[in-house]
Image (cartoon, rainbow, N blue to C red; front, side, top):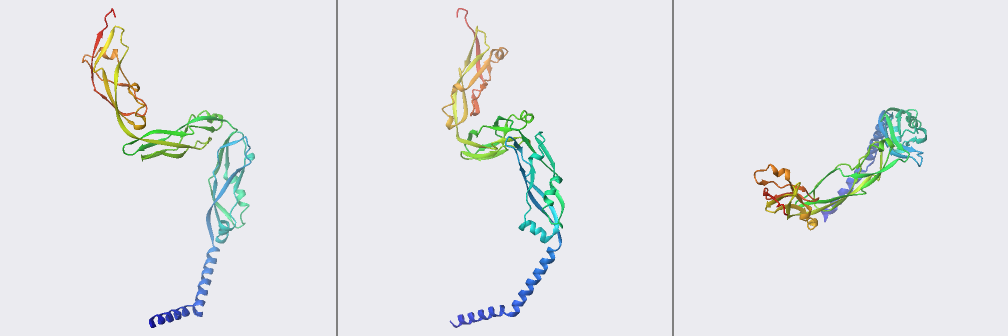
Amino acid sequence: MNRGLQFIRYLRKLLSDIWSKQFLVFLFFVGLSLAFWLFQNLSGYYESEFEIPVRLVNVPERVVVTTEPQSTLRVTLKDHGSTLLQYRYLSPLKPVVIDFSQYDTRSGHVVIFTRELIKQITQQLFSSTRITAYRPDTLEYYYSFGSHKRIPVRFNGHIGASGQLRVSALSLRPDSVSVYALPSVLDTITAAYTLPVSINALGRDTTFSVPLRRIRGAKYSPTAVRTAVRVDQITEKTVQVPVEMVNFPATKVLRTFPTKVSITFQIGTSNYNSITADNFVIVVSYDELMNNYSGKFTPRLKTVPAGVSHVRINPREVEFIIEDIPSDN
């Protein structure tokens, strides 16, 4: 108990010593030195870069701006540190305004030298402030008077599934978009492509948004599409398919051994029942067998249905004979 009281008394005495007059005087001079140092630094000349917004105004309703001008200008200012701080926090610089009516050349493409717009910035500056640099050197934008057409959307990328899954379907919504541009530009655009997408080891159905790849002088509406990807469990299926004759004379007939070949393939479980032997065609032509003296040919698929992969044919070689059809038949 006594030790606790002694500790409390010691702590009170320590705090009393800290907040003595000498310590307060010390803090006063530290604050004064700090203020003097800050004043000295802020009174010096410095350079600092500022981002100034760019606004395009007075655009007529019948005009579609297909490529906007750059959204900001980067301007480097030189002045006292205190003045630069004022621009930064107290009096931010106002946006640079581009009046569409002043640059409407009817050409659909406007290029403006940045030095023409700098006057709008200098009017906001103190007389002691100098502009030492700015970028970019030029601003440009494209517009049209409503010319547009509808074009299909194309997916650009790769999507792979994980494990025993496979991508069974990929759809885009919308599957077509409107593109606005000058007629000369519209003639060169046949499809809208998404930005590149790369997804590996997808484990479930997924939907995501993908922006469309921009084209200078053109504007899409909408500017992005929803991509829906379905994955499915992989399974194998085997069907029996006959060999069909092509270009055989009416007096000839083909006999094959076996009469049908087995086709084994991989397919998603959701499409298992929709793919049958009727979806596959194996043909052999008379011209192909005329000079075949081995009595065997390799069966080849003429068509492979969508959604089917890793197709295998058994047997790899089929024996055959060509018989004459009796004339009385």
